[in-house]
Image (cartoon, rainbow, N blue to C red; front, top):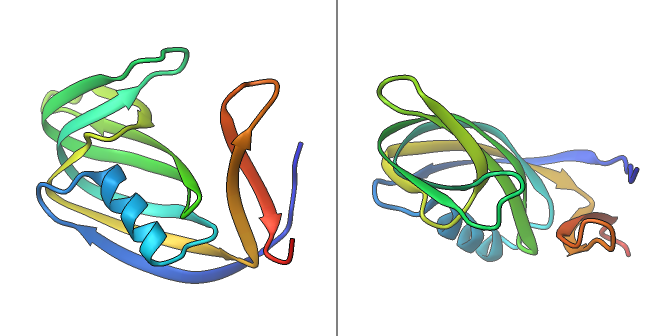
Length: 141
């Protein structure tokens, strides 16, 4: 286990507009804001398309239609992000997985993002999983 203690930092409130790609928009915002470490506190809204990768799969699936965002969580920084999304369709059928490029805002996506002060969230290759995993570090390192 890797465990560090940090302090709460500034809170950001974002509203993504219809047609915006969630991942592309958040990556650009994190770079522009020079965001070092943060987590998603709250997310509500709707999508017209959700591009998700399920656990154990290399490829993504696209679900489209009137999709309600039921959950969005994860870590975000200018160095990378790891986000999971759950959406429900008009019949209440839910799907969820890793959020990929291609999740398109339908009417709105309202986000509250909390910075983690004094930390930097890097994503470095893990020798066991072979994925780029969270590598939290104090900013003074």
